[in-house]
Length: 319
Image (cartoon, rainbow, N blue to C red; front, side, top):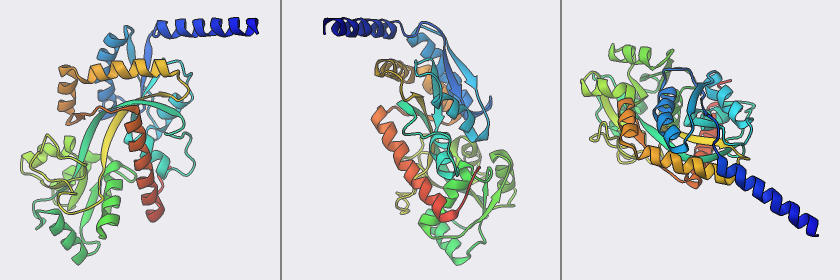
């Protein structure tokens, strides 16, 4: 009995020493998309502050491919020692598992969340020639002419596409989907009048709305955007139960010791309070969003249910 007690005390002491020393070497922050995109830029915006708060270098590592699945899976299978973090996104953690036939990771089982980091609202924008100025007018037009309104997207399975599919199911309308290879080409054709609308991120379409080249109808997010505060949300416009936005958060492998998760969480909250971080996000058209791990879990759980329903009703697959 005494021997077991001594062993337990020794194990506790060793574990405590390991946790107290964390981190004692560089930490990797996996961005599961290619360099240059919003996820990569967001990761690089928080990495310097995280390095300062943790006292070790936090190095951004891009693991792009398969819509974020490759890098996300790599973190799910990484050693749970706090030295591999994930900048997860709504796409990689809720959309991919919902629209993939055989997901290689479970966002609720395989990760320990810390806080959400940023949110980029999506909004419905239309070509100025479309004779609508409100969500109700848009729905009335779409119902009067089923399939006549052409909805551009950044590609099949993109957030711009799936948000449009969610809108059609909730509003009871039929739009004709026109996929492009990225939001850039989609916006060019929309401004040229080749298509009629798109559900796009404020960060990319906002400047064209401000320049009066496109018309903003309503925000798909739960709150109005600081970039375009005069544009109402869909809920405010009378479209109940419709919400979609892109967001990011920092995650660790699920078996990571709670003390290490808390260390990362505390450091991240301090970084999100820094003016430099907020300025970097503003340049992206993103907004800082802080949350508890429990709030992150509820958000992901709810979005998984939402997107799985869309998949079941549309049959869309992205793998």
